[in-house]
Length: 416
Image (cartoon, rainbow, N blue to C red; front, side, top):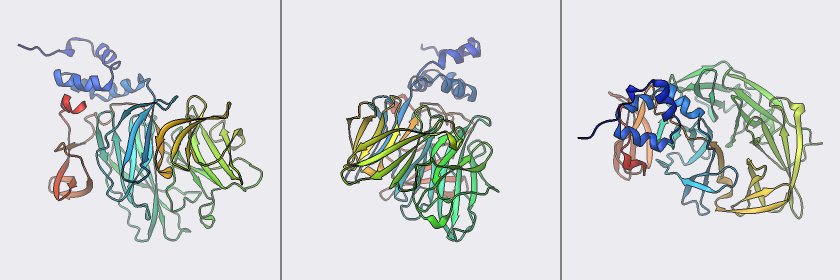
């Protein structure tokens, strides 16, 4: 007769310490053979402890194929870009395009949006435990909505994830509405915040640094797509501020992109100057976050056929997307390029830091549980007598996702 391992005989702190050193896949499998382990592993204190001991850093890379027929999600080593694993994404876009808003403490925030309106659905995904969470629709009563901008991050002082949504009116002179979502409360709040800059009607990547979401922005809506500042929103204090760009002796650059620094504690900017034979990209680092006077030029990248710099990696090198869709690593010291062996649509590449975690396993949160093993193609929120539901369709056969308190864990075979 089989006997179940009883962890309750050990002191809780000892049990937590032992289990917190195990990889997530092992922990989930462990719950299949020891039912008593689930309350421990899903305990909020254990989830936080396990995350604090997570030492493996990853890059989560997303890109679309050259022919736009496929997309890829994969985890990579942050030093070498060697692929560690491919991720199975649980559904396809309803509105047309998936945009990665950001990644923090094991959760990846997505915005499923239309290419032209930039209005859509926000959801969170934890690929480590294969769970996702669709945010409720924000009750915005603006009938003259133009577009919206999304930011995401984790706020340590309140121990919660937050999403900020900035909703612009067709009349750009009207101050946009600002809404903040908190995961613990599962609700949106409208805040009385004044956005000091304008974010144009196009997809704008953001950088999350020190509890603040940062975007390239314009001081006036009349400037269109011309960026002349950085707008930051502090998710902790829920306040805006504007930061000056570095002085590059005139605004004669042709393109600019914003990234996080290698350590993730500040910002860096790449300015492109188009030339006849090749392009020159200047890399600037904000040595002290929030201090405009700390902008310091680091190096130049002089290469032809660069589409955009994607990020700075831990080795001090720069990840570049070439105009032909090839992903390469550039060494600024040796001025050499190394091929990563990855090809995709140049404008589709998005890379964020990712750490494995158990977030969303916590039974404080409602879970969205799949009722079938079939791949999900479409999803949309609806209300029913049983509360909010996520109706999923595949071809003409409707599938159902329902919001409920999760008390079971995936079968071991589903983790392979």
